[in-house]
View (cartoon, rainbow, N blue to C red):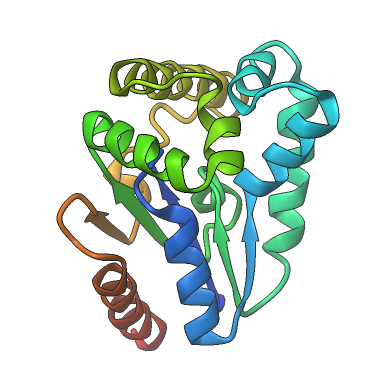
Length: 192
């Protein structure tokens, strides 16, 4: 399989997917795409939360069809960074990265980010304002995604490390080190 100049970044909520993807795209001078941003646009147009859209997608396959077509089209390009839970699946010739993070730590980050960036995080977490409620929301969303992806694509676990070329636990690693680690691994991957 021919390697493409594409990095796909997946990861758990709060792990830093968006920040990492944006930083990488700037450093590499690649175009950045985000399925999360695309989903937020769909949710906003429908007047519902991102979590409600995720639950709705369990019974309305048109939502995933729209997202999937978008990922496939993005995968036809070169020099891109895509943060998407299923980028590894739809663009298998990409350099596939997974950012891991314990849901409890993620809920702390999301709660802190919610205070600073109220519009984006409110969409992601609804009206919940405690670590416990955010952790519950994270776990519910993960279960919802696993159910959908199993039914639609026969993917047992989209968070399995086996799907990725590089896995980083971001709990104790600052963004710049995460980005540098990905850059080094990506350069080696391109030449091997």
